[in-house]
Image (cartoon, rainbow, N blue to C red; front, top):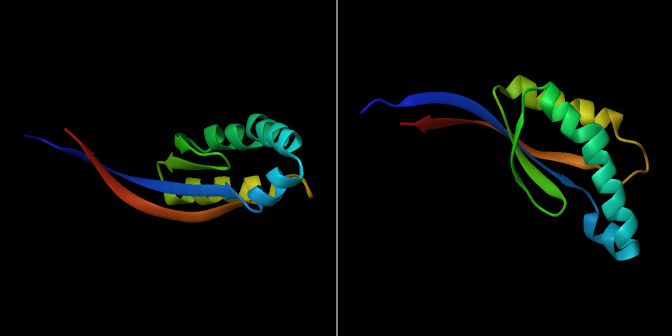
Length: 102
């Protein structure tokens, strides 16, 4: 049985202060989050060859082919975030992982 192994970088990101923002303005927070995903986050992920693996209410796991791509994406998103937009999107974890497929 042969296995193909590859390295991947996983970025875990979420919105800082999401619960507070939702408590203050649920509809507005959801609209701002959708707009930020559509206009900033999703295009940056694609630009850096990322693939969204899982989304949660205020966060996501994104797979990248390299740690460099993951970090560059996170930094560019953070720098381009309007302030005060939706709180900060924070890259809470960026690590490499080995995956295998048969």
